Image (cartoon, rainbow, N blue to C red):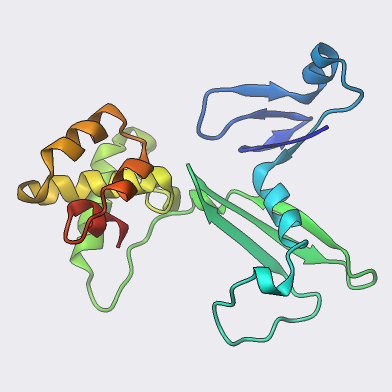
Length: 195
């Protein structure tokens, strides 16, 4: 059995990135009486899965022609921000997938000129996560929990735009990005969060 798990795999073991759970492939083999259990990173599974997509299952983002045996990146926002990259063996054409923890890179606000709102968001997150060594990773902004962080920042900045009912639900489920998405009616703070 192969299990795709969200975290770094070392010696067929993983501590989940966004949960305080540990999983050990060897223990699962023994406890479940399965011949072999191999743990792989969840985005390694996504990367290999990308290789199975047909042309009509892919949406092109630009007009650049794909390069034969070119390096492939796979990025996806879920609870966190998963990433991997695939490199081809030029002799066989077969790809090998590598996990990446690039989501833990620094969040650096950019924009035309000085984007004050993004800079204010960064300052807000530095205070919120002050126990994280004064650095804010990209994952704190571009992910499901990132959506929640942006919503909280906008609610702090624009309290007169807060829908009290939605905000109470958010306080009960502070990591539920689906709640924000479901309440993203035109002109709402939830809609602004998703933009």
